[in-house]
Figure 1: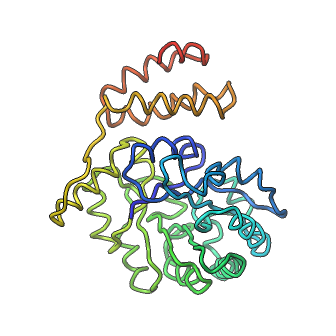
Figure 2: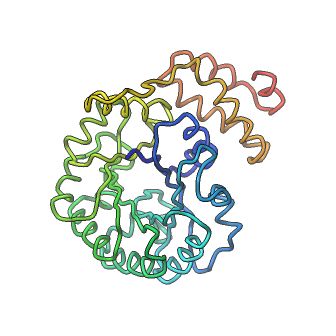
Length: 315
């Protein structure tokens, strides 16, 4: 199982749509939906996860699991129940976001300092979501250090989480390499709940190393697949070859990407405010140039453009 990660401000429904059209991922998790002290209307969920209007799947048919972020068990439970009624395969809970603003308001990775709160949140959400739908969670190894990583995972398991994604860094580590995949193996030795390894997977060899050190076969891909949209296919090709199975597509070349870049731009043009459209394209090209030398020229050209009309002409 290869899962597309949630990344606030980057991996939203636009990139989910395009990356799942390219293929190589089996499921997506949405960027977080912030829950404070109110039951959100369906339109809020649809704005962040428009796939809910398509049976909870992207245009390419890949399931999208909405993610909730908050700290009040009862309010999260109420919102999870509403989300579940909208047709997704389940609900994910965010205990990993390292953003200071999020943590300051009691959400994301700051909750890893209190395993009892993790337990109460998951238990309340699990009770509110129909049994046939999944409640999963994403955590880091800890807040300031990883001393309570196992205790936090046990709390999520006790609350009823049926899958836990572990980003193999603490909040203090942010996104700095390395990822401490071996600590996921320590967690795996304590919990029975299926675990997914996440963090610093940029290449096939990283995926193999993460599997070997974490003991997890399932992986969540984030910046690595934004940079190389063929990463999922490359991992699947390796797995198929290792099992003596037919090898699927094993790379996405630069010359394969222009139609997908155009699709990305068309979706951005229809769903994103005009002043932010050019920035979204520049953001993705900036990632792509780390993998594709040809993307450098495209990035340098588009970087000078500001109006949608100019970018339309470039396409």
